[in-house]
Length: 323
Image 1 (cartoon, helix red, strand yellow):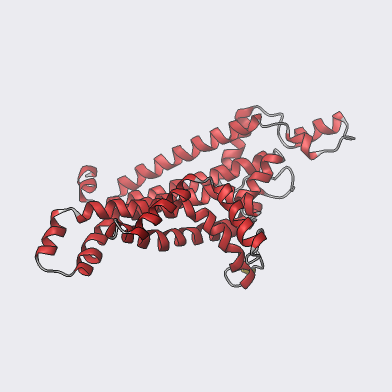
Image 2: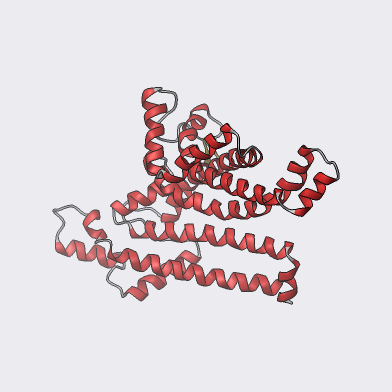
């Protein structure tokens, strides 16, 4: 177990280093940040002095080495635009993104699993066919278009829900939450449903396909032959075996929810890390852009590592091959 953890930890470090290198190298070509930091009346000498102070005249390898060493200690440098530590900006926006991703994941699971089970058990029913046809919308429509349509319907036409912002939030230590205010909860509905829609349809279709496959297996037929009621066969035998791959996919998709929140946050002006990244791109704020991508990669690596450890704990074949 220890050797397995060390291998996975080493692989994670290599992945993080590679992502940091690619992100830092890519953002060197997005433009000159000095142009967005100074006014037109700034002299050339003042520009050169600012460039020197920011370390932009150093060779690329020196800049990246400084960035990587500081990032390993949780220090992502100073934002070119806000003139404050990037880590403070990231952690200030992180609660909004994590709460949005958390609610979206819950929505996708709570709606996706029952709908998948229903469409598998009643696959020839009219309601099932309607659900499957409607689910194509969730798969086909781009996220930004879904968000705009929801804003038009529930925000502009019906005026039921707010169309932008996070509403009122409450500070609990260093964490800000919208879960404890009415406006915060109302503000969560549209962006969380927009972000959850693709994952919801994905989980629903996955559950349906797995459920149909399990219902054809011999142990389910044997359970029916023993005279067990349909409810017991469906929910104690079939569904239990269906959920194993669903849990795996859902765990991996949690990282996607955090990463893809960038589009939803832009549409709804949700003050999270994704919106901060979009604003940083417009301002050529390289420290924020690089920090965001490194942080998203860290979430993916962490979730994959947890899934691998669970596999190792559950599957005895991995333990025997490791030994």
